[in-house]
Length: 343
Ligand code: ASP
Picture 1 (cartoon, rainbow, N blue to C red):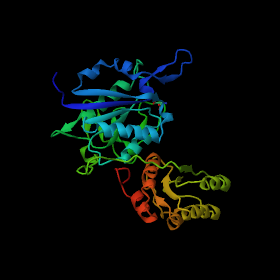
Picture 2: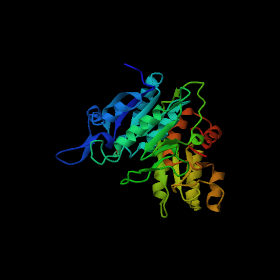
Picture 3: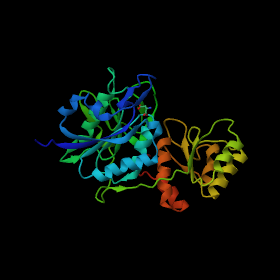
Picture 4: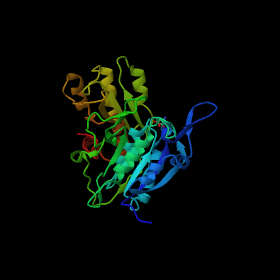
């Protein structure tokens, strides 16, 4: 048998792509993926060898959690030298979180890790799964001078490859389910596969892959709204063991200047709870100090999430907290671009 130019590991975690309708209830549930793969004979025509590996119990990605992220990271670590690229089949609901988490967990990644899935199951007549799967494999197999073209965690959906930690799921109905509002697409699939070379992440790979497996989950995500009460916020910030909070503020990082609110944030920071300011807007950036309503936050010690997505901010917090950095080093690390997640 002749060896093809790239070999790809296809990891199935679950999600609609591999689901079937329960004949009784009509609800979609995960199914044995190997059977479903037989429905895509086109895979054999690709210029690469494909091996598949499935989660023992495939899940709807609403059940995704940091333990599963460690499982995915370990599969990649174990197979890193055996394969040229990795394609991860995953439900779209939490795909942006998982792609963000893996981007931080896989330091010095020198190969493509492409997340994809679909809005309709692979067995459905009108499925979007085939194109998503086939193009993801092609992107993961791309090589130049015998080296992979993409060396980062990407997310491919509906003709576009995005940087994973820049994406957000924006639509539960359209095939175009994701957007990356603060960073351009890495590639687009039309008649030709066009790679935006300038936008690709350029990792330092000579140190080899480092896999980070400790994630802090004693954190909270708080979205402000007009009328949010002191009682609710006090109870969140007083949660036992709380280590960090992603605070979704308004516009360019603005929030209430009421005394009780600012005192609550100040007290939390004094108790060593890291607070990250991210915007509720889908696009744009936090600019603390632009308005009086955010100026005080810098003085109190809030960390600016700049133009990071909430999903990436959450995962970056989980990744950085276990590093036991002092306050200044933590702030510097968070405000630095580590994996292309912020501008
Ligand atoms: N609920 C599904 C999941 O996230 C939706 C999808 O696969 O797109 O697993």
